[in-house]
Amino acid sequence: MPQEPFNILVVDDEPLNLEIISELLSDPRYRLRCVQDGIQAWEVLQGSGVDFDLIVLDRMMPGIDGIELLARIRSDRRFADIPVIMQTAVSHPSDVLEGIHRGAYYYLTKPYEHDMLTAVVGAAIEFRAKQKGLRRRLSDVHDVFAHMRQALFEFVSLVEARQLAFFLAKLCPAPEVAVIGLAELMVNAVEHGNLEIGFQEKGRLSMEGRWTAEIERRLSLPPYRDRVATVSFERGPQWIRFRVRDQGNGFDWREYLEMSPDRAFEMHGRGIAMAKALTFKDLTYEDGGREAVGTIPLNG
Image 1 (spheres, rainbow, N blue to C red):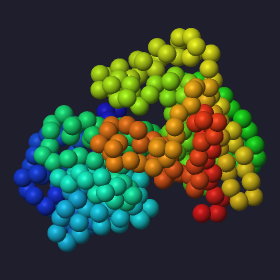
Image 2 (image 1 turned 180 degrees about the vertical axis):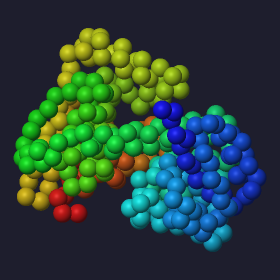
Image 3 (image 1 turned 90 degrees about the vertical axis):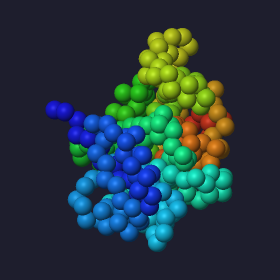
Image 4 (image 1 turned 30 degrees about the vertical axis):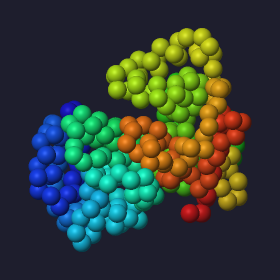
């Protein structure tokens, strides 16, 4: 069965900008809906019946501006997890930080460069596709495990990490939210922990189209092939706690718990911050960054 196009809502008060974006994103993989202000955008989100996969949002608009519309989107459960790319001619760190705090994890500066626009949109759409795929597979887990109180699992590959994320998310109050953060932490334990691929190296490999091949290559090489990651599950009276541990060299995790304006324009480096924002009430790291500890409350 052919892949359905990804639905993208583009919001900009300048008709020329809408025309440019429509031309640059002319791709059978994408189905665009373009509107010229925040009021129209909010009406389309609420009443069109379309499940949008991405919103490309202008920051400066009359009436409801991009920041206000973003706040509405993030406060509504129907739309809260849709990736949003904030497009702006203002890239001062304080302005970028305001957007990040409201939930814009992707940024795009005007005037548009074709390669940058397609790369940012591609990264956000890839995240959305993985997100929807994880949620579809939640139904594969049997409810019999809902009474589990404690468990420990090992995993080596990205496939194993995602399979375990499906299973463990089913044990949480909101599986469709839990699976996103769990998968991010567990994939990170493989990629950046056990396989020791750093932030800059991942960026270079991704731009060269060699990221997946490098993951497979390292999984077969010493010392990486002998490393395992673990995830433990513990249920308390008021919470569920996960511990994701790798056998890498550790990292300075503090700068990744929150999105930084310096990384807002990068194609990666937002997974831990998104896991914290979307899934975990508390998220921290221990043992020099080798163990992530995330807590989910059982009662909201």
